[in-house]
Length: 231
View 1 (cartoon, one colour):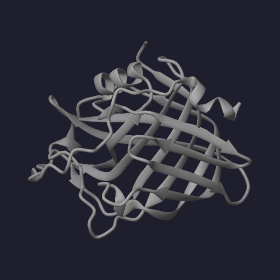
View 2 (spheres, one colour):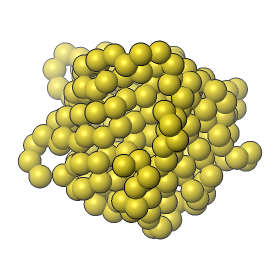
View 3 (tube, one colour):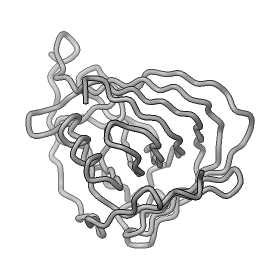
View 4 (cartoon, rainbow, N blue to C red):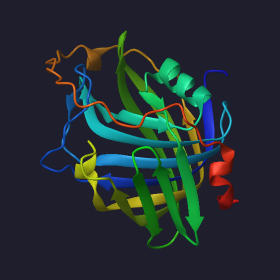
């Protein structure tokens, strides 16, 4: 698959405020950083493992002096995408049945087992956007840094997150500021172990209390037909 991982498609992003009962899922090697949680829904039309859907939750985090977003929950509709995410970048990908839909300018993604719905309505004009991104993850061999580069047409949006009562993400329920993208292209480099001065600063290892196991993570998959209505 090569060193660079290139994907294209469209996505919606909501910056969700954490409620008082929010339980962080950051690994012990990373430290929390104040700020909202990113809730991301994506439809990838093209990737090295083919088309797939993704819903992920990322928390702001710090590794030494490096800051970035740590994906702490990820659901994907493709077994090959799950394997690649885990093996290449220590992303906590799980298989889930998902459905992407488009009604006019509105986009939505449904995580069917957990009945989580991410829905975005655009506000304002399309603008070009190019930006570097950094993911901080941690696996069995320790923390890694994942450099990314993102380019797209971007539009501000209102993003509604609907989560059933009793779900571990219930505190993210509500309407949030966010964005929609079209013609998105994401280039992800291989994960690398932190090195140099930035990684030499001692970190206080946090005590992580395991939260409840998310319900509904099954091997059921909705394939390309799940979002065929988008065109």
